Amino acid sequence: MISQDLIEQARERIASHVLRTPLTRSTSLSERIGAQVSLKLEHRQLTGSFKLRGATNAVLQLSRLERDRGVIAASTGNHGRALSHAARAVGSCATICMSRLVPENKVSEIRRLGATIRIVGSSQDDAQEEVERLVAEDGLSMIPPFDHPHVIAGQGTVGLEIVEEVPEVATVLVPLSGGGLAAGVAAAVKAMRPEAKVIGVTMDRGAAMKASIDAGHPVQVKEYRSLADSLGGGIGLGNGWTFRMCKALLDDIVLVNEGAIAAGIRHAYEHERELVEGAGAVGIAALLSGKLAHPKGPVAVILSGQNIDMTLHRKIINGTI
Ligand SMILES: *Cc1c(COP(=O)(O)O)cnc(C)c1O
Image (tube, rainbow, N blue to C red; front, side, top):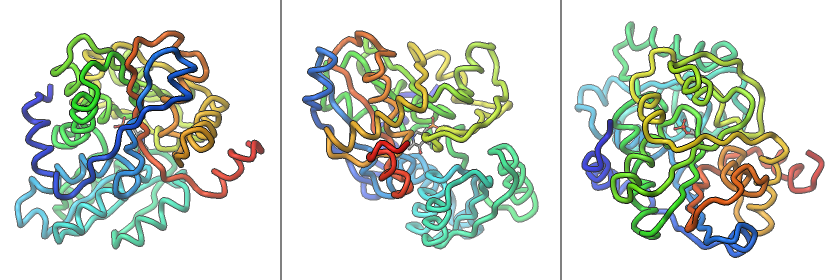
């Protein structure tokens, strides 16, 4: 388990490298739910997602020699982007392995950040195999997207900020895939406010953490295309951290479908004036779709990322998707 102490240390370590993102009241969601709803605007984080927190916390703990050799990860996009940014900030260089399913806008952004890109296979697991080969052959340091204590502690800093701003928070909705964000946020929130419920939200197709918790051990799931592309991928059959933490700390996992995710993106844009990607909209989607009928307030919803293809965003806003 990651302690509150480690998360506090992470916050100090990364403070000068990341933004403390705003937390705002949502009038329209509060009225709709009948409880106070606040939005943690983490999609406005540098690089467009919370992933910068964990990546920065991990890179800053590497030795000079390790930084010189470089860092490597498999990524569906946002972690690769964050790691590229974090590596560059400390004078290191990132190699990013990703599957063919990753949208072109995310690939080109990572290329722009100066990283070396390798596109392999059609799943996160294929990309991960390539990472392991390069770690063994070239001595690069692997910084995984979620299953690493420094990464989890970094993501947990989002939870500290939420509880500081809404000390009486009763429900926190966290977008969930590999579980780095959910594990870190749940550890921070529950340490400071044990009675609060932390609920993971993910898409209904290929929900790896949900399937794994139901099975009692990490399982592989089929990957599908989704508007929430940042939530794709498995949790790793050899998962060492996030599976146990999510199993122990999450009060529930809620699944939302593609229509609900599109409605969440639209709501964010039209009613909150926020531009979010699919993964960043699943918390709003859960509230709007009635999947979480009467969450206890105050509710905090994490908007986790903004890196959506703008043509796709326009289609969703216009209702043609
Ligand atoms: C990575 C990511 C998630 C899921 O985070 P995990 O730590 O893998 O559970 C959610 N939203 C966005 C925007 C992401 O990039």
